[in-house]
Image (cartoon, rainbow, N blue to C red):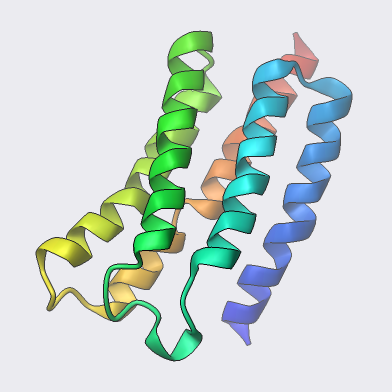
Length: 137
């Protein structure tokens, strides 16, 4: 039940922040929001069936996470916005979960699942802080 709520609450929050980004943000916030939406959709399409999730490296999800990490890193370097640096750091945590699973097959499936999803909400919180800071200035 709690897992379902965790996953289902993400979409309305992402959509709310997307509307805020389009109304009050500049191109970095809008671009990041589009990247988050694309990553959410890519992960939805790339993740394997639930009964085999997290028991091996999920290559499709790794590609999505890696692409998002690179794009956020590029945005952070290009704009120098603090919230993007934080969002990139949170995404790095999620991406390293795949590397941990690849390097050690005894890596817990529960640990892998927690690390893989750990960046979702903190990254959106970083975006919300970025929007708030931009609107305030």
